[in-house]
Length: 104
Image (cartoon, rainbow, N blue to C red; front, side, top):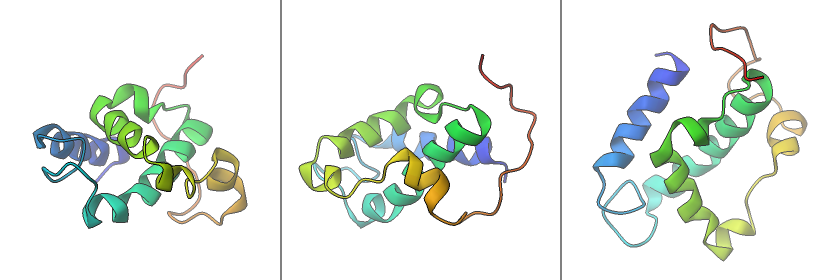
């Protein structure tokens, strides 16, 4: 599955929820907590390596991340863009070319 297709699937899953989270609760569940670290890494890497602003192009993903960012416990553990892109070894393999249009 291509990266953007996978993001579209995540976007649709979040759109179906009646809350800010994957499941219809007022708080994050293990599903959200398990996924947020990978998603913040993808957001940072897509912007740095591809010029793709995931948060701008996928509004439900952005809403979900903003809900996390409103939680003090998440703010205390959230990764920064430098560490996510450069200091940690590539988790999903090296960056490679794509047909995605780079932003000016």
